[in-house]
Length: 301
Image 1 (tube, rainbow, N blue to C red):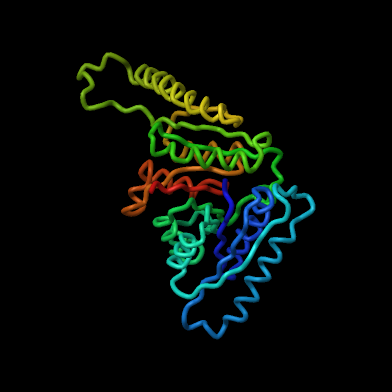
Image 2: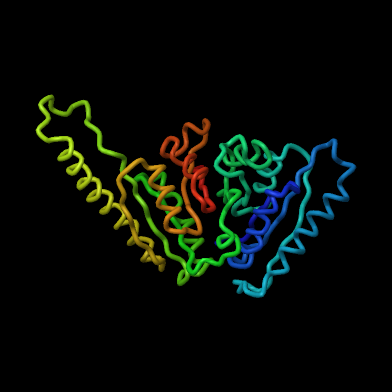
């Protein structure tokens, strides 16, 4: 169960976007919110102003809208200051204070170098021991203020154990949000058919027949796999269904997420040696920069 959420704020308008979202999540999930502002040694003269900013932000978090039904009494929030490198201080604070996940804002679809706070979000993603919940500029107001009729969580899977590391987090999120109000959708996007190097020189099938055969095979294998995962989550009390699509994984995930109005997309990342080593190759990067939903990213330890 999640108990503590860390929200880095740098005073920018973009950071305030995630602030509004954090206010809603705090009430829905019943987590303590810790707002962190990191300053440089050259800015020590501004400490009183920064402390007033972060403490005022904490007060606003605790003033929940009347429409929000709190999961556990009142929301607890506090502001903290730290001096040093932003990414390093965010990670250090998370490690030392038992943080369950970090909520951060990013720019829109213009690439990783345009993320909020420069390269901070990227560095946090690469090294964080806890999940990172990203909210990009342009996300729907209905999502920010939790006004969708039902909360839908999209879980793209590729059939690997690595990708399944998100499942305990999906279960926790659904239960804290309220399983009766959450639909979980498991998605497998099979890549387009190719002709392997060991295929017979005299191709026994036409290309159309080959595509049809490979599509049927993909849907059978992927469908069987997703059915097993679906059963595990249903046994845990979640409402779950599965979808199998054919196409380029990243494009398929983004298109499906945007057309079906999800509240959240949950994926695993693998970033020990840079963005090229993330799960699915560049799929995770393309999805988190392309979907219009917030993205919950889990990095294997």
